[in-house]
Length: 318
Ligand code: UT7
Image (cartoon, rainbow, N blue to C red):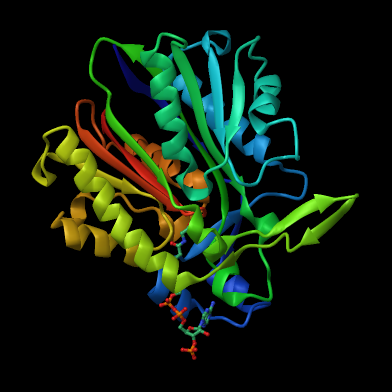
């Protein structure tokens, strides 16, 4: 029994914010942002648009593409760091918006690795016979947690959602997943705030030691790739596509170089939506599926890294 991706979908909010737009209220410039990160623009949700709204739109597309009815979904996992509310989970709110009848629904909080964590869990549910059609969504509204006085972080992130339908199959799909964390590094990338007695204590904004995260990301992307390839007795040459977390083009290209992977096999979408955390891998996947790059039977490597630190990946036959 395998689990396979049988549908993909994505949604980016209508409002785009270019680097030039940011120059008007942040001490930054287009040249710096493009040369250090590859980002040219990002999308921001409207004031009344919640993470669940973005997730709902991406999910509808993925369910349609999979040729399923909403009532055939029997597990919903939403990977997000920017939930609609403290509780219930955004997954339950998405379930309600999509009118999906009673089925398990929960969020995964693994920051930018959230999608690969969710894929790992969905795969296990299917392989253990507990679910047949799993809706997995990465959805974020980072614009709500950016500190506009911290130019080292606020120019990097954006909002969006990507979704996949994972379904049970006799044909190989997900060949191997891996998930890791090292909580000793949690202070290097965090939103160190919480709610206490009706007030926010600490800071509700993103803080990041960019340089530390950068070096760590390149290291674990390479390790994750080698771990998954070795476990499945595949080689770099067998890979058709590398779809890493879209944080920074320099991280992605450095990893490709270390792995000796041709850049044509790298799917990169960070230039037009910035770092969308848990949404970035399914957003990139959906774009490359829609534009015809990724074809059935091709071998894809996903790799995620983020706050925690968390990291992991998946080797997947499409
Ligand atoms: O999703 C989780 C994963 N997150 C990531 O993967 C992000 C990882 N880190 C990065 O992508 C990079 O470290 C950054 C893009 C955040 C920064 O790139 P960098 O090449 O490491 O730059 P830096 O932090 O060393 O900053 C260099 C200079 C500094 O000026 P001085 O001290 O050299 O004069 C900064 O003050 O760039 C300055 N700077 C800026 N200038 C214009 C920092 N931010 C900006 C800005 N605009 N927005």
